[in-house]
Length: 107
Image (cartoon, rainbow, N blue to C red; front, side, top):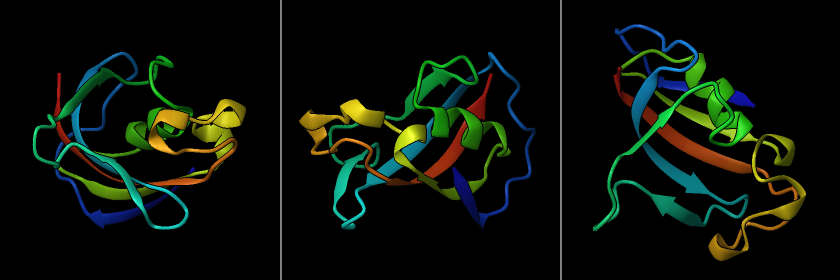
């Protein structure tokens, strides 16, 4: 996973097992958006970071961020959905995905 900071955060970094709430927009390699918490009817996403409950690229990427930070995470297939992909969202096997993300809160 590679990370490009879009806006520096001023809060703490999350620790393994903490619950974080994030905004996220996901893009295929073609640039097509496949999901966004900012779309109408969608909500922010909350999960425990560093425990393997989300894709590996998210665990590693979010653990390197600070609260309030906005970043672009590029996740190769082995850090995203791997060989199985995520067909419901049009994500093929071993697809490289780009996510624009922001940590809203850490608990």
